[in-house]
Image (cartoon, rainbow, N blue to C red; front, top):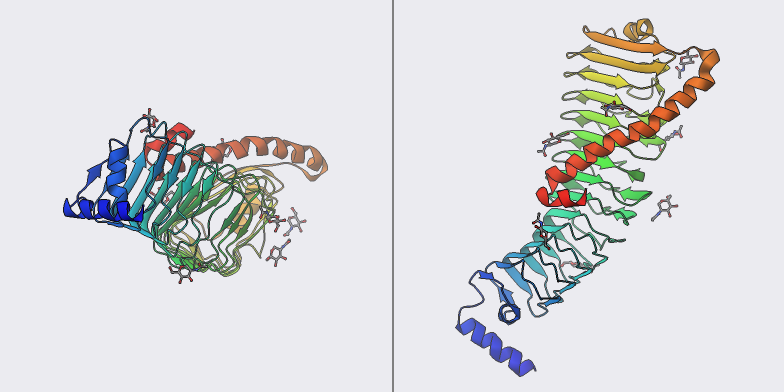
Length: 383
Ligand SMILES: *[C@@H]1O[C@H](CO)[C@@H](O)[C@H](O)[C@H]1NC(C)=O
Ligand SMILES: *[C@@H]1O[C@H](CO)[C@@H](O)[C@H](O)[C@H]1NC(C)=O
Ligand SMILES: *[C@@H]1O[C@H](CO)[C@@H](O)[C@H](O)[C@H]1NC(C)=O
Ligand SMILES: *[C@@H]1O[C@H](CO)[C@@H](O)[C@H](O)[C@H]1NC(C)=O
Ligand SMILES: *[C@@H]1O[C@H](CO)[C@@H](O)[C@H](O)[C@H]1NC(C)=O
Ligand SMILES: *[C@@H]1O[C@H](CO)[C@@H](O)[C@H](O)[C@H]1NC(C)=O
Ligand SMILES: *[C@@H]1O[C@H](CO)[C@@H](O)[C@H](O)[C@H]1NC(C)=O
């Protein structure tokens, strides 16, 4: 057996088959690739019917791309020896339930996108990755992620996934987008200090970002189900901060001094008071500010200027007059707050509970857009 492999490897080498792009059309093309321990070109397996198991267990590294897509009959992928690849893309394979990549360690671009029956994805030790996307699968656990400075991380719409442990990550050079995974998902970025692009965290029941100190683009929190949001180390958000549709009762950004653009706090049904502990050091908002909800109090103790428009809306105990008195830093305030008096507090509560269930529907659509944006049109079939 070893001998046969060695011979076919020699034959493959002799034929230069290990460094020529290949569009796989049959099992024999798979064998050709598998005869190479190092493959120096692209392998594209696209829309080939009749292949149930794709095994390339002999291949250790691929310096080009390995793309496996639109394979309707495919059920399992086995890449038992693969330790490095420039890119591994497993896209839109309806029936794949297992992708075995136990040794994969270094991969510039890893995309596992829209494989709705995928239950087992067996990487164990990803140490270097530039683009990491796992979207639209049925996996219930992730492998070990060990890279401390990856590029992008995007984990969306894996509805059985409940533990997202990215505690190795200290910085990203690109964006982070995590949304719409399992109910009561725990999301851990406990070492993360700096995000080089957008940072968006959604649908978490716990979220550890306690070291996060800078975000180079928009920072967003959507439809998270925990009650106490604390971002204790965040000093700067280079663009906007958006907090929408969450269950937060308490929000605290104790170190935040600057926002690069706008501040949006909308549809957080349980959040009623912007206290002196919410944004104690925030000094300037160069963009707009949108506050929509059932507010009883609003205060920004350090705020000196808001350059854009301030929009205030919703029903609470806070009146426009009180709000305007608090927001002297703003010149342009559009206020439509409706005061519900304290004696009818009970009924106003149940009202806001009612709009809460509507509200949690609205930001879901935002998440869905993010799926399409982040994951090509492919993800559209998920929705
Ligand atoms: C996904 O794969 C199926 C066949 O398996 C194909 O009909 C469909 O067009 C593919 N979708 C995309 C977006 O390529
Ligand atoms: C992961 O891989 C790296 C390098 O490939 C190695 O140094 C490290 O020991 C591995 N860690 C585990 C837990 O296997
Ligand atoms: C999520 O975190 C909570 C609270 O820390 C814990 O009780 C629960 O077991 C965790 N769930 C998972 C799937 O890790
Ligand atoms: C960052 O997120 C915003 C939405 O908040 C989006 O419009 C923008 O395109 C994203 N930027 C990048 C570089 O992905
Ligand atoms: C919210 O969490 C922070 C940090 O973990 C803690 O200091 C604070 O006491 C909590 N607030 C409430 C109201 O639970
Ligand atoms: C909020 O405002 C109410 C009056 O509307 C006041 O009684 C209460 O003490 C305020 N709470 C905080 C935390 O400032
Ligand atoms: C907030 O929710 C209301 C309805 O509940 C919806 O009309 C509005 O568009 C939502 N706003 C945002 C910014 O999501």
